[in-house]
Image (cartoon, rainbow, N blue to C red; front, side, top):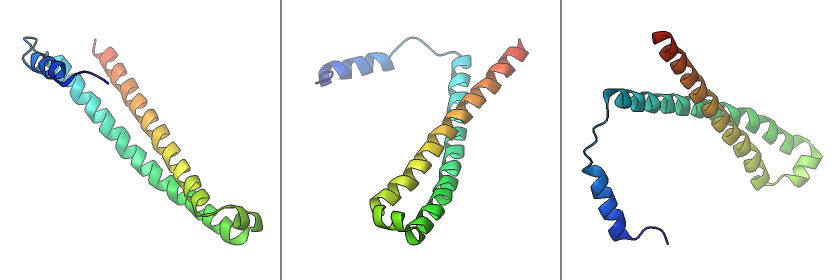
Length: 113
């Protein structure tokens, strides 16, 4: 369903032609938000890569050496174990990094006043 295309187009045009001009402080806030997001993504990718290696090595060794794992963990299960650890590490690290950056920024704003 959603919004009909004619209404959506009119709404977008009206929003572009708005007479409200953002302040430099808003531009600065948007720039900082983008920088914090980029920083979080970079840290998350690094953590996901490390988690993939750290979880892949024991999983693959276990599948070759432990009889229960050899019988019960097929390729899909192995991929789910490795990707689950990587995804969790990515999102946890991004969240912590962005929150830490915001906390650091708010302290700087508080100290500035």
